[in-house]
Image (tube, rainbow, N blue to C red; front, side):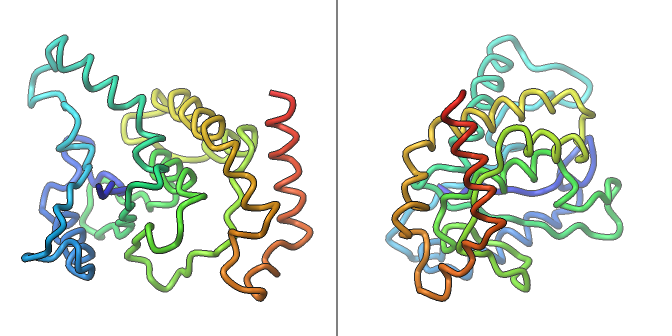
Amino acid sequence: LVAVSYPWLSQEHPDPEGFRLRSVLEQLEKHWWAQEGSSVTAFVFWDYLSLFQHPPGGRRTDAQDALFKEGLCKMDLIYSSPHTHVIRSTAVPESAANPTKYIERGWCWFESAVTAFKPPAQVLSDDSDQERPSLRIPATPLAFDKALDTKRFTNGKADADGVKALYKNFLHRSVQKLQVFADGSWAYSRQARRQMDSRAALQLAALVEYIATD
């Protein structure tokens, strides 16, 4: 399963001119398991296509709305699971009705944050010039919430509280994974372990303190 993390290009439609579709296909075609003729069947989670949306000029039915909300409550699992790949499609064309950058979007910020425990090979990105560090210590909810409050949402801030709750769910489910920071298994080399500097150690200590007192 491949989950796509991307910024909507307009409030009415996330990809009105097919820009995002072309970008995602280009990234998928770089991997053997997604190429035509592969023995692997790759499924793609794309929020606009995978979750019921309001039809033009109308509303979801009650049954569709219930399924939409159920799916939304599992977004932390979809993007953080060790069994999924994540495509970060970050580019925003100049012609976009909503030109807000990927890193300034609330949902995109969350989707990237919950990939903290994923191996680098499971997070594919079109910003290849930005190397993904081996050490990615999750922020405490307080730090995450503070950062999220500076981000933008396509539908306004109404989604913010739900996203904050999803991030807490992610941390509570991932407590056992903190062991990788204790045994050093997060690092693929001695050089990589140098990323655990004093700043990283303080961030890890704050996270452990939050979990211990929550």
